[in-house]
Length: 244
Image 1 (tube, rainbow, N blue to C red):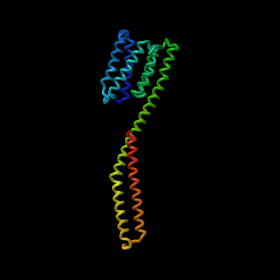
Image 2 (image 1 turned 120 degrees about the vertical axis):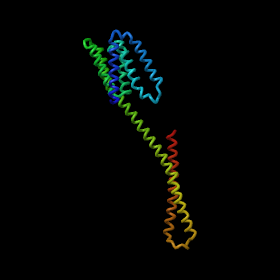
Image 3 (image 1 turned 135 degrees about the vertical axis):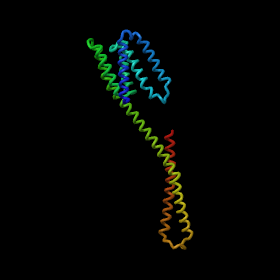
Image 4 (image 1 turned 90 degrees about the horizontal axis):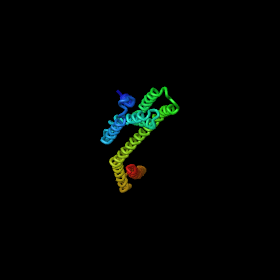
């Protein structure tokens, strides 16, 4: 069973249980006590939970929050409750803490319950409240999806930053351990050859063009070595800025 299906089942059961409890005359007299107990249980979950298991207890704590809100609304007048606005906030919470589909399921079920209870006594105020629930549902879904996309984008940015730092570290290691030593070795060898040819002068039967070519290579190697050093310093500077 997928997590979305499991969440939907638990959410549906919590809504039906809250409605049944509030509709039963022998049980609704204990609404205040049940709400208080659930509130203590909710804060107990939040207080004693560790960050490592926060995601694991997100389901029961959200179900408890859902039940508390519904008990408050059902026990204070239902569709004409002064706490009716809690349902709008509840849909946003469900869409963010669960999946957006859970907000839709909760909205449909709660609207159906209110219609069943008030079918023969609908007036303007009740109809407005019902429409507010219906209209608030897609807003909550869109908001939650946009919020999740922002979080996903931030996650991708963090991954890219981590990859960039890793690339910078690898580049520094390559420059310091491979590139610069190799360039220095070639530069030293080229310099030795140039100095040797200059000291021998005309005793060596080498075309002047070859000697000039070696000097040109020596100059290019000096420039390349200096560029590698500048690149190493630039990467270190940017890496230090990123850490700050």
